[in-house]
Amino acid sequence: MHLIRIRFSLSDCRRFLRCCFFLFLASGTPFLCGQDLPEFTQGTVMVFRSVTRGYEYNFVLRIAQFRPGCYFEWEGQSNQGTVYLKPQAVEEARKYNSQRLFQNGIDAESAEETTYWFSRALLSEVKQKRKASIFLDSLKTQISLVAEEPFTLSVNQKKVSLSAVVLKDGRGGQWWILDNPDNPLVLQRKINSFTESLASIDTTRADTLRWIKGRKLKQYAP
Image 1 (cartoon, rainbow, N blue to C red):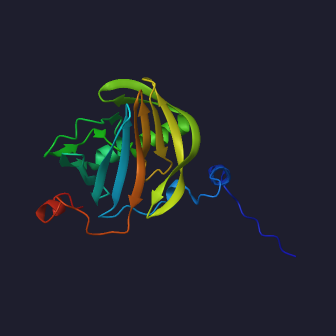
Image 2 (image 1 turned 30 degrees about the horizontal axis):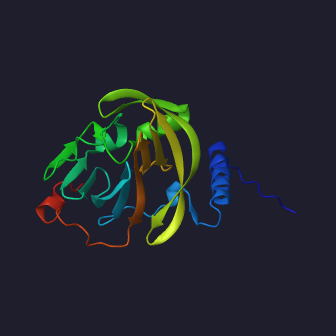
Image 3 (image 1 turned 90 degrees about the vertical axis):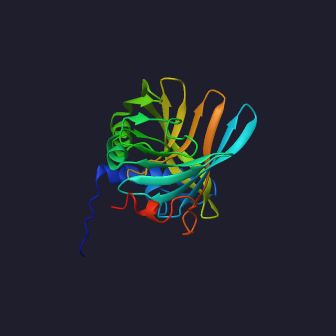
């Protein structure tokens, strides 16, 4: 009789146990580890729902290019624009801005700040050290990892739960970040009476872009 030895790293074991734990918590809702989320391709649409003091509204992002830089168009209630997060921001940024890049009718670029995503390096640091320094809307503060839990939303018209890390910042805000080193997407953020949550992701449609077309679409092509 021959025995086959299979070796797993400690990180593999932790990932497996964490996924099993989240699957148990999901209570019947299909569970996806962060790495299993469908790839973001051109045309991916994300709908965020914001609530503040009883008032609700939606905010839509449409992906034109996801890597190496992140290029997307956005649409609010009565305004729209585009944002390009340069590769160095996607990889290394320690600054997050929720407002500056969203000016009506403006094509914004950023090499030092991210928005709607944390940088890969920032997520990696906070998972390894359980804390990290960050500038939030120009204010220097610290974020700390306080929990890991599933986050429920619609992915391609199906309700699923995604693995997320929960962070707390020095202002009292809370953040739910997709536990995926290649896609550290902000799933939800809460500060005072304001909550913004990702309600749905659709990666199945190609022709969704409204303003990034033609020459504009090729502007940041790798």
